[in-house]
Image (cartoon, rainbow, N blue to C red; front, side, top):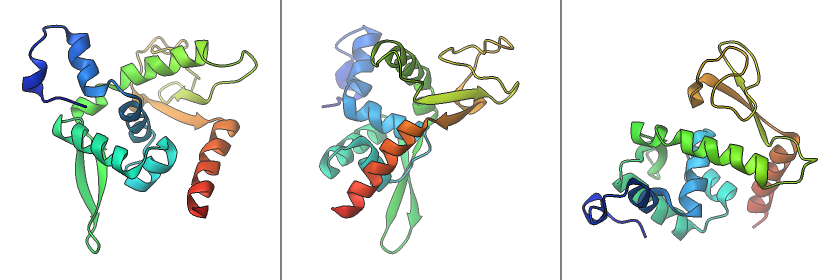
Length: 166
């Protein structure tokens, strides 16, 4: 599991240190959900498919490592939302690059993009680029307006429905 910053100091390699923080499927999927605006445990569990124990473990590790912070949203019973810290937001380009790689190499040629991003400043689709092909500006998550494809939206809705039926 994730080690503390002190425990990671046994290597100078930044890749190895980074993998210690975010190098498993569940952490990456939790980050995806947070970037998509899902801050509550239940929705993260539904959309990642993680068990409650797995998700709790990952969120605690991410909180301990400074990637997320818990904030109460309900008093009785006490419930928390999870929000990205600056450290968590600074990881976004890695997720964005994974998305671009996955859109290119991990699907059938006839499938469209799962998520389209429009550059808010100029109103043009950025495709898989991290620089807007229309205006040439580098884009960050907050610069982009996402639109989930019908297929991806149906998949996410089906997960919610399946969860309700449990």
